[in-house]
Length: 153
Image 1 (tube, rainbow, N blue to C red):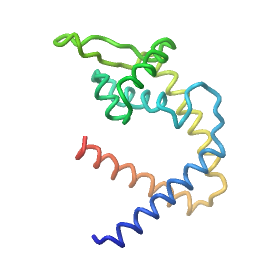
Image 2 (image 1 turned 45 degrees about the vertical axis):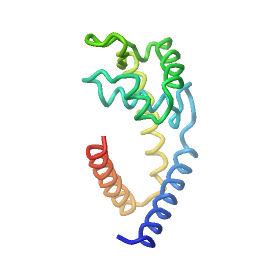
Image 3 (image 1 turned 90 degrees about the vertical axis):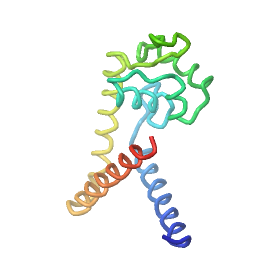
Image 4 (image 1 turned 180 degrees about the horizontal axis):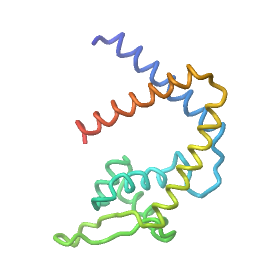
């Protein structure tokens, strides 16, 4: 496009993100040690989304945009809680792979259910047309971001 359009798009998207985050923060009460906006929540999401493959520590750190040392501390904590497990790669014992445990899947499911309940509560103030528009936008955003992830890994 052009620079002014891209700037306006970026500003509008940032405004949306900040407004959305503020709405979520008003209603999501942190009732657990892993918060919605935490690295722990993000790690569980990554591992749960990739249950069928064992991701390396390096791949998780890269995807989370944190150092391997930060991830190691996080994994130590979450492994102690029974949510994740490490295993050595069969072909390269120096590579450590992560997977979510059944306890982690259950816990992450509970977290998501809590968040969904709070989002439903947040949506109560919107009328039917607004809710339909939010649904359409949410589906489209999800599609666009999945396509971006597929293109950019």
